[in-house]
Image (tube, rainbow, N blue to C red; front, side, top):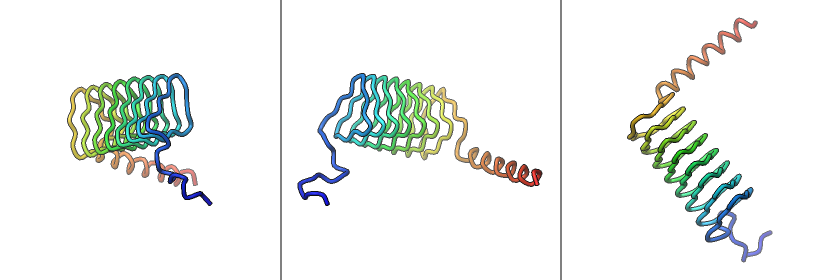
Length: 155
């Protein structure tokens, strides 16, 4: 049983943490800055990554420049010359970046590539979007039919 003086599990561990040319498994702080380093999980209000990477970031604001991120769950995400596998945000801004899946309330995207885009409001130019919501549903339905037919032929 935890002492009453122990902070709750979701409370930040520190005000500000900076990682330079190093790494960490779990980081909890109000502000996290990563320069040429990485972290597996980051829970913070503000995350700033330059030439580094994070597997999972859960924050109010995430900014990545020339880096990578596995999944970003945030209020606002800004990717500049970076790559992300999954971005879920209220507002997303991509500039010469790539995202596998981008789910956002509003997205401002310039000269970027996105695999699957789901957003209410989209602004941008010079982009390549592989699947919008309608195309993703059509692709999923077609793939389902193909797999069903293959399973029938195998019998």
